[in-house]
Image 1 (cartoon, rainbow, N blue to C red):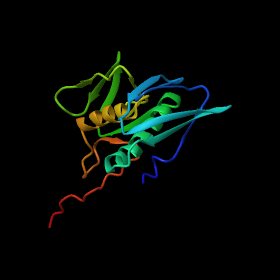
Image 2 (image 1 turned 90 degrees about the vertical axis):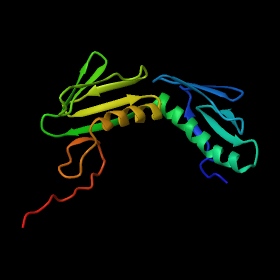
Image 3 (image 1 turned 90 degrees about the horizontal axis):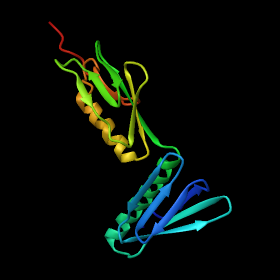
Image 4 (image 1 turned 180 degrees about the horizontal axis):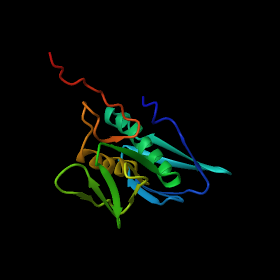
Length: 182
């Protein structure tokens, strides 16, 4: 039995929820998201005075339905959090001469290569540069924010000897000692 799937999702009244068969649409202050859920689960929306409650139930009792049940509930919960609060990832650049800047909507990275790297974010993702070494990726879809942040990090992942590169804000980098002479 999925313990995550059995939990209900409480949503404030300022978020609109529409369910049409397997299609669920959620509107909120940050944006609008919609997703088609698998036929192994169904969504029930209960309206109360000051909030909505979303319950995801499995239709069958097969092993696949049990697996999809918790996943679907988490996807719906991420949609609710995305349209109400949004998601963001912070990346820290470490290294001499490494820096980032925004030109228009594009992110320009100087990471010690012979050329600059130009990255264009998707339309639903916003990228900000706080100072030359801190990048903030934000948006309403958790997976899109994480994917674009991972693409930025993949330009120059942190290396274990001096820690130079692009790392997530609270990421721990296992450091190695260099070679020692005799």
